[in-house]
Image (cartoon, rainbow, N blue to C red):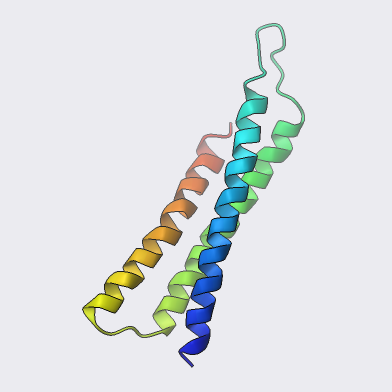
Length: 110
């Protein structure tokens, strides 16, 4: 049984990296489009609304991915200080970007 959770953790780490990369690309496009607002043109381009919701959806997927990673680590029933430290490191690597994308997607896309 421990084989599947370890494979799942690898898949979740890869998924987290891909989701974070996609989020970063979309957020940079969102920021660039938002910078086009001037006093002569106070409206944002229409794509900004779509990008805002895409960023929020990807951030939500990142949080779900982090939860699945934590659950897969729990299923491994790790023993030993070394394994627990490594598991905490994996959680930090997955949870921190997920929380950062949630913060950017919700509070910084207005």
